[in-house]
Image (cartoon, rainbow, N blue to C red):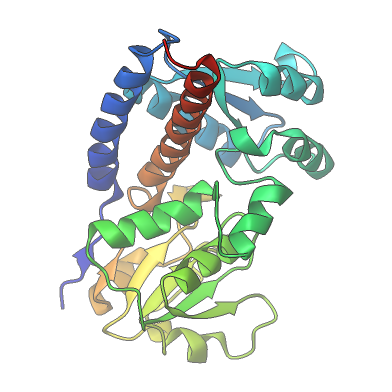
Length: 289
């Protein structure tokens, strides 16, 4: 059996071209400038550094100006207020995970929800939970974008998610429910995990546990989306043992190269949407020319 590879790099390339055109239109508008994306990072997490650098590259590739802020550039909590008030800044992202969890929470809580382009604030989490999303965590959006790009049906499918984090598991569950999937969320207290995963039509692995999903945990018709980003001595790996699982499933996303390349594009798409809304509001305030 040869599984279908859900290549996120190809999906990201298509998204990039669309965003480039939209940023060009913004730059040609009344402001005459491209939108800015502020990327805040603190601590020594390799995964956080990888995410921040991928966001910077993605921003430049579509014409958005990245603003990288770290502990070395000044107190990050105070920086948030300045960024909230700066009309040139369309989006603000805190690169997770932070070593200091309390700092991460304080930073996120201070972001203006209208600039929260990674869907991290309590306000945006609440709108998503109500089924009325504004901005959504980018990795969760990337899962949906990957499925849509490859024409993978969601409505009526049994979707099993491993992981209940606020940045992937829970928002993915909300997005899939909104698309009429039957959703089961598994976690560390789930008994007989393999029994649940073998029944899945869609399996979303987002546990942060390298190689957790093994071939005996899947069926031959399942579509597997691996959201894991785990730093190991041999490099970045996912939550799925790709070498053994890929030959026995219908479709699978690799790590790296699956959800990863699409995630920054989702941040950029929401940044561009925020900039477009701000431009519309500014035009409305200006009135007829």
